[in-house]
Length: 350
Image (tube, rainbow, N blue to C red):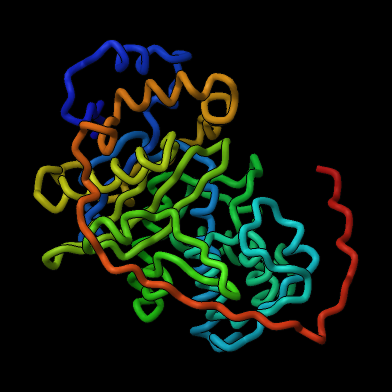
């Protein structure tokens, strides 16, 4: 079932611009809404089209760590130390330096809530012999879960043309992570963390503005746009939503909340089969959103998307009306006296 949703608004001149902008297939960015219990698809747009996952990759990072915890390979008190490789990751907000350490429990909060790219790599290195070995586990899990449109090349989701997934696969991953590891649901509920007193807020506004939200993960790089994998429960019903390629955080949050609201209100029909029956597209490459989002063309594209999805703009209705108490997790780090500064080997030519 593929639909052109206009957020209940009449066709406007700006919406016309949106339909014609660059004649871009990315105007129909992937969306998937699934009943998490029955796996019935409630709504979808291009759910099998490959996409760059950005930090939603960290859902699989967490899944692999959860498996390692269950098998006894590591514990929640296992130290996770910032290696030289970890500190060289891009877009760092943690403020952590080489040799700082935290518990694995805190590292999971930093990876999921704060989306810390450096901590995600350090966590991978603490669980496996190195990040490459950890990534192999990620891909092994993907095969086991039937994520036929997914391949991982790193633990944090930074851009790599070979790191891709689909809305279908992310929905299955999120549903299975919650089903198999209910004892770790708390890692997805925190709306911010403090690392040695420095607060880093989650980009998932639904945690504090949409009641029943359980998580799970946001993500953004220029190539992907703003992605979201979310799970919410109301009145005994559990719904998974995946929105990929949103232009602004407002668009991503509002659209996700709208889909969830409509699903809980029974306004989305379950007549499109199960999520497992959605076909992944192997005949196309992931859409690269950088020209639309991170160049001088971004203002025009954003205006076109605002016309398509005006929810939450001044004078427009918002689907984020609830007031949910924030959950804040405090992280304390220490200096690991045993860390050694081993040079990072040069990457092999591709």
